[in-house]
Image (tube, rainbow, N blue to C red):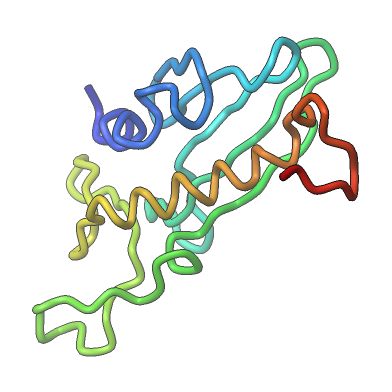
Length: 142
């Protein structure tokens, strides 16, 4: 199992965020509903081999990409303080490739970080969920 797959399993392996999760390489696929699939993968943004974000894409089975969002770890978690004196301002969290091995750079996310990332993914996916039966737009349920 790759580091990417291991990290994705920590986020999506229990069908809590979406169902039928499948993992391959640095990508996870799942099902939002009958017609819409979810693709979540680690991506680089500013530097090659620095995976500093999770890109979540919604795919219609017949028509292709519907929408996507880029969740940057720094935006969610901020700069992380570490005990290493070389990083007095903290570290921008990211996975990186060093000597052919993928690992977190200096800062290792904890369970609270993962929960925050999962919540951000869930909030995004909720926008595309079917409304709960009995609820109408602008009407609160008691």
